[in-house]
Image (tube, rainbow, N blue to C red; front, side):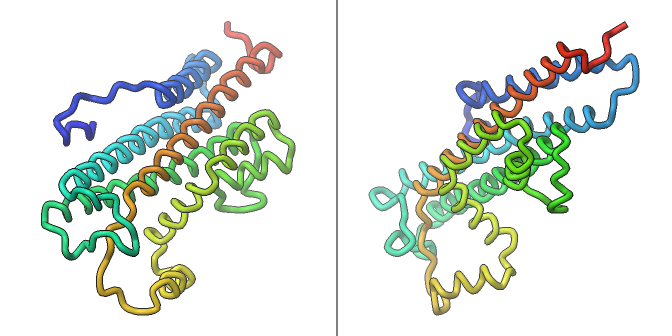
Amino acid sequence: MLRSIFNEERRRDEGLLQKTNRAIELFGRRLRELHPCDKPVPAKWIRLDLWAESLKSTLNELEQSIYCSAKYAAAFRNANGAKANGARENGPIVEKLSEELRDHYRRHIYFYKNAFIRVFSVLDKTGYFLDTMFDANTAQIKQRFSYFTVLRRLHDTGLHPVLEKRLYRLKDRFQEPLDRLRKQRNLEIHSMNVELIDEVWRARSCFAEYHYVEPLDEHLNDLDAAFEMVCGSLYEIFTYCTDHLREQKRSGYWPKRR
């Protein structure tokens, strides 16, 4: 959709994104096979179907935001030359950029923020999907929980250890970039939080006279890592859940069609 901004053709899914979308679609088809609409479908499965569709949509929006962020970072580099990457302490100063450069930079920042917010939007939805799919009852230990809370719940209860270990490996592998993006997300959404303001103050200890261009490559590397983690986790989850439904069907859990 957003590739039209750059006069480009529509995206053609490939690689991990394509695998992940196909895994989500296969789960939806399996649900419909097991629950034909010739009789009322239990609310749990309708919720899971809606969450699956929402996850696919949000993943698509995340990919587009990352793509646009990278395109505007590249436009900034091309227009600015050697120092285009930026650095917090000695990079270009935003207030001294040309109007063209400021526009490229601010558009990059807009889509960068949009992307890291969507990273955690996908993960939050994934947490509720997992909690509902496996009846983990995570709300018993935390009323408002995250994806990572559900992972701990699966670990503590011993539910579906094969999937839980796969997801933990992905979490551990991408822990550092996710932590950086989480901090950015918290500053963006909860900027009035006193502890976060104090952290910024300790780093500056004075009013900011200038604002330096942020490190564009670090932004994009963190977003790419988060996207790989999100896609990998969703692929593992939906592949496992589809197989889980198939096994329940074989074991006689599901009523036979008439």
